[in-house]
Length: 207
Image (tube, rainbow, N blue to C red; front, side, top):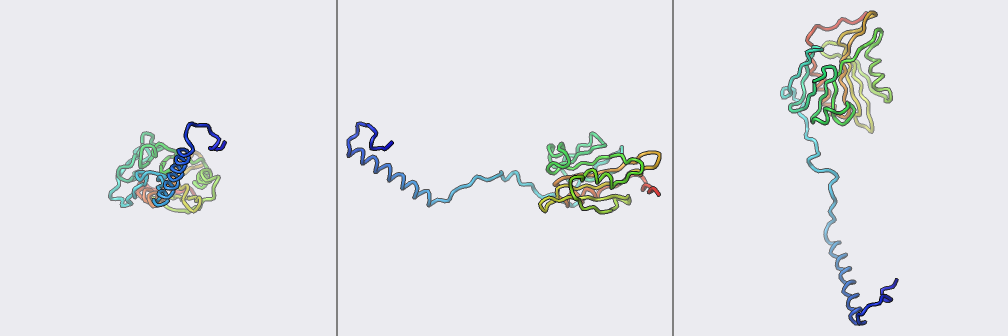
């Protein structure tokens, strides 16, 4: 509908003046808006940026698992939920410590059985069944172990270390200690793993 066809009680002179004022206001608004920079809302508040974690282990806190007889250190102030010695959860915040190991930046230390004639390679193969991890034979405090890491878009998406606690035999299963993490900083993960210390003697390897 055209503005000129709208019925009103204004005289033609007043109507023309009103239209001219509105048009001038619109042009001025566009002009002044072009002079000032546009503001863009931040995608996330500054508080969401994670501060760096110190990897100086002399500032970390020691934690002991007396059930499986080993100790480890975690960054100062991190949450360590060790109510279940077979599944110790570690995170910078309580939510991270409660999440699954693949979620965000949490870490899980668990003890799992190794069936007779089974090796830690089988545990890693089950964990990384849908990925193509890089696998390395390592040693943790003198014990045979294996490190596996998977990448996604050039970044670490999952990492884990498998340590033999008690080797299996033909008669009984053994036990492995598995440290799993998702997107946790690899430097923090490797530093925490390097703090593992076992109480008892090194296990004898099965011939």
